[in-house]
Image (cartoon, rainbow, N blue to C red; front, side, top):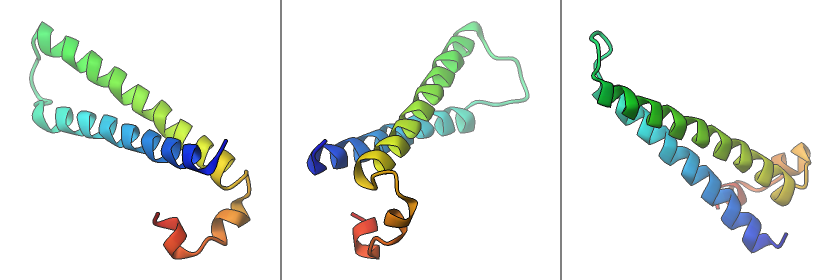
Length: 88
């Protein structure tokens, strides 16, 4: 895999994982926990949990792509990157 594709996949998967987290966090903050919810809200909650699960899979994909394609499965190689390279 070339460097441009690896970078695009690494950034894309973590962005999708973060988007799923934001969906879940927004739902959790907007939904009261101390009362029964309607059937419609229950269906939405199931969809939100599915999005949350898919986000977890995107995070796993992010870790696999980052270590596999960018760091070539080497933790020391990751640790030897310059701070400016880590932020890009």
